Length: 247
Image 1 (cartoon, rainbow, N blue to C red):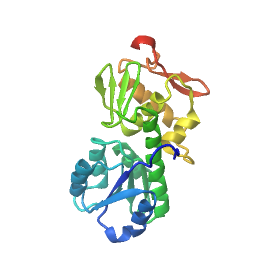
Image 2: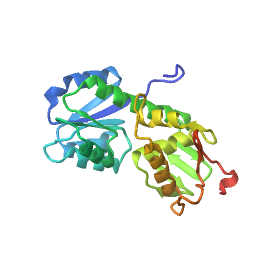
Image 3: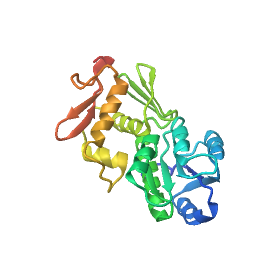
Image 4: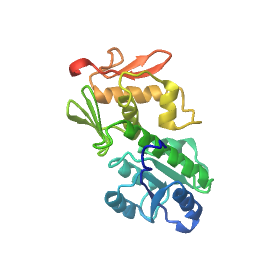
């Protein structure tokens, strides 16, 4: 953390029906500065999320009243806060794909190392905090040309029209808008969005950028340059900032 600012408060919502097995996880979250609220059902998680606005979530795949996948989809309709899903047994490719599509940021073993769970969650929250402080800390708003990003509401706008973004698309746009006109290497973007030591498939970042471009400029296709995000061959990407908001 920068020495010039106060450590932000972090709230973590833990949704699990097995509270007794979570002592180590809760202790490590406390160590990393989280305030924790534990609930045992998806219904309680929904109520708590609306009331408490957590900065991060840990959700069991199996809850008494709903699947953790369904809860994850519901969470993503309301917040882009990092979410780790915990699953019993082997985490196969199909489960991981379904969980990621539902909006989970990671899927980890239910009986795995709690240190890994907390380290992963803390890293994601710290990246969000880092980018947020680059913007306007008083109002939580980033602006670049025709684009506006309201960090508090997790809402993007093009020419004041709202644009619905998936959590990682939001994080990608936030990162680019925090460095307008600056060339961001692919390796830097991947580390910020997926974490250090993570190596996603080679085309995952390209797909994220393509999806974000389409949502910001729906009429754009592969044969027309994006008005907002420039590809820098063999380097990475850069946010365009046209003068006067014109293309």
